[in-house]
Amino acid sequence: MAMRLVVTGGSGLLGSALIRIIGEIKPDWQVACLSRHEPKRTKGLTWKPLDVSDLDSTRRLIAKINPDAVVHLAAIARPDICEKNPDEAFRVNFIGTRNVVLACDRFDTELLFVSSDQVFYQGNQDKAHDEWETPHPANVYGETKVLAENFVRSHLRRYWIVRVAKLFGGPNDTFSFIHNVHQTFSRGEPILAATDWAAHATHGLFAGRAFIELLEKKTYGIYHAVSPGVPNYFEIAGYLAGKMGVSPGLVKASSRKELGLAAGRPARCELSIKMWEQDFGSPLPGWKEGIDLFLAERR
Ligand SMILES: NC(=O)c1ccc[n+]([C@@H]2O[C@H](COP(=O)([O-])OP(=O)(O)OC[C@H]3O[C@@H](n4cnc5c(N)ncnc54)[C@H](OP(=O)(O)O)[C@@H]3O)[C@@H](O)[C@H]2O)c1
View 1 (cartoon, rainbow, N blue to C red):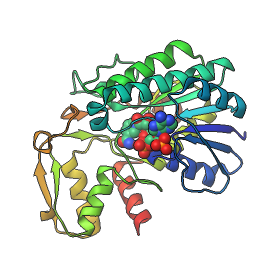
View 2 (cartoon, helix red, strand yellow):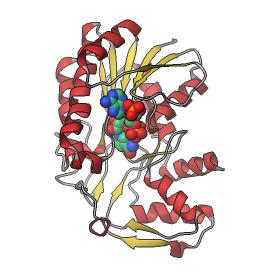
View 3 (cartoon, rainbow, N blue to C red):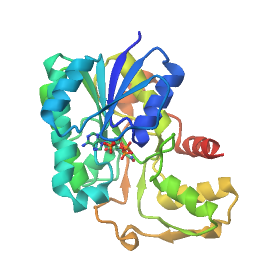
C-alpha cells in the first residue's frame, strides 16, 4: 500500500539513507522531509522548513500534510554536543519530540520515533538489553532520548520506538566513525581506535529498510534495528584497514579515556533483537556487510 510519509530530520545521515531506500524499493510512496535547512535535491522529495522545537509550526505543518505516518529523526544526534549544550539538547530532542507527538495525537497519525542504544549506557552490560528493559542512560543525550521515549509511550496508541546504534553510510554520512576512519586511511594517516568501547555498528540503509518493514507490518511497540554483533572500534578500524588494503599498523589501539570524550560511554552495549526476530525472522545484515556496502558507495 502506498504511504504518505513525513520524515523529520530527513536531511541527516539516517534520513537521507531512509529516503534513498524508499525511492529504490517504494517509488510510489510520497515523502515530505522537514528540517531547518534544505537537503540535497532528490527526485520526488518535497522539503518544508521546520524547527521541531516550535510547537505551533510543527502542529500546523503536519496537519497540513496529513501523512499516514511520521518518521521522527530530527535531533541533536551527537552525544558530545548534547553534553556541552544540555538546554539545546532538551529543547530539540525532548521538546521537539513532544511537539511531534502532539501533532500525531491530534489525528491518530502513526509515529515511528528513532531512539538510541544510549538509553542503556549504565547498568549491567554483560548481557543484551531487552526491548522492554527500563532504560538507564549515562549522558545528556541518552537522558533526552529516555524523556522522549516516555512521552511517546504515554501519549500515543500507534507508535514504534526504534532504537538504533552507531550509524554510518548512505548519501550523507559526513561524521560517523567509519567515515572518519575511511578519510584518515585515504590520506595514509593513522587512527586512534578504542579497544574498550564496543557497540552495534549499523549501515543507515539497513536501518532504513527495517523502518519500511515496520511501517508496513503495523505491529507497533519497541524494536532494536541493529546489525548483530558488538565490535569494538579497534576491530572496526582493523576490518576497514584490511578491506582498503592499508597497513594494519595505521590502527593504533586506544581507550575511551585517551580519546577525552565529553559524554559518558560504557565498555560495551548490546541490544536484544528478539522483537525484530519474532516478527521478521532473520536479523539485519551484519556490520561487516555494512562496511562492505559503505566502501562500495565510496568507490
Ligand atoms: N548517528 C547515529 O549513530 C545514531 C545512533 C543512534 C540514534 N540516532 C538517532 O537517529 C536520528 C537521526 O540521526 P542522524 O545520525 O541522521 O543525525 P544527523 O545526521 O545529525 O541529522 C539530524 C537531522 O535532524 C535535523 N534537525 C536538527 N535539529 C532540528 C530542529 N530543531 N528542527 C528540525 N530538524 C532538526 C537536521 O537538519 P537541520 O540541521 O537542517 O535542521 C538533520 O536533518 C536521531 O534521532 C538520532 O538521535 C543516531
